[in-house]
Image (cartoon, rainbow, N blue to C red; front, side):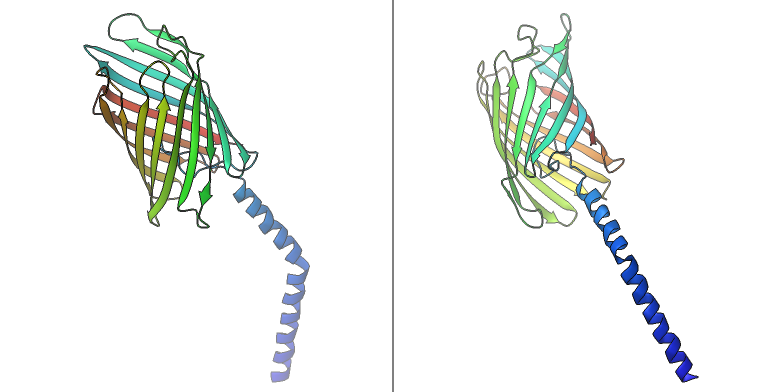
Length: 269
């Protein structure tokens, strides 16, 4: 009886070994395809006031649209500015991304007529200059240039190119909380230049859901010349699928800005 059991045990081991050897190539191929599929997913930017370590993969395309809204009061006049910005983002290399946005602007003042038309086209370059092996911390220099395609007389554009250069630093506080600090300097040819410092706190609730709290300080913002402003923004980002992401943000400011918000949809190819 013991001899029969031992023969059965040996035969089972031989069968399992043969099964593994026969199907190992298929198993490795399936796992490899799964890994490639995981690596192929791009990572849209979730923050508004900062640039975080979310980049498309090499030669991947991210397409989407942002709706930006600002309600402000300058002197005794108030207005609403809405921008619908279709954009494309492309991974030139693994650590380099370029993004182009074409805004359509609508300005509705409480006095006078509304204006609608093409705004200043935006081109943004992002470089992941340093990233730790675990993804945090990281440094990302970035540059945004706007082209004078909007009508300056109607308030749809700046009239000249505007350059904004900055650097972003990000790290993790806990496994589910990360933060980003972003310092920028904007060169405005027809007005005073601006210094900006923004910070974002992200709570990673799940792989699909993130909550955000963001703040930004800017100088030379209002009609008073050297005035400064602090803006605060709260939001959430939800991944409907691996490729489709939605972001909703809303907040206010301490200066001329009464309310601001943004809605974004993005899809990765």
